[in-house]
Image (tube, rainbow, N blue to C red):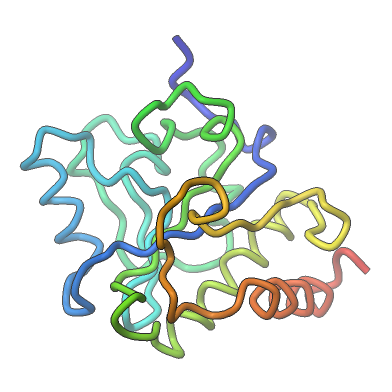
Length: 180
């Protein structure tokens, strides 16, 4: 059974919402997951309402579900963590072997994400693209919504248009000097 994902395998990002109140933090959701006998959150990277980035126990290859890193800097989000536990139920699927799961805190069927969250989401995915040297516009790194892979309303009907988000990410990566 394979339970690890190496950075060299990553070629997709799937964006989720947490389907929770905006007043919840990633740390609180991680504790709730542990209370429900899970190894922390099923996501890899969490973007809080204020735009702060958290890393789940799975992303940091933790020995315990309670190991959770809050307010991490953007640089090194990939290179500082070369291997990860897989992200979700059905961990051995090809999708999870190649995918970074990013969760944005909130329920975007009810409310829109904050400007801070959208800005940070663009930055995080651009940083992943940059550090892995994978270009979105060339199809080397795919950016998908959860609803692209499954029949769910995630990340929600009030989330930014997928094409608009991808264009913002591509522009950011090009500004960083990659994927021209």
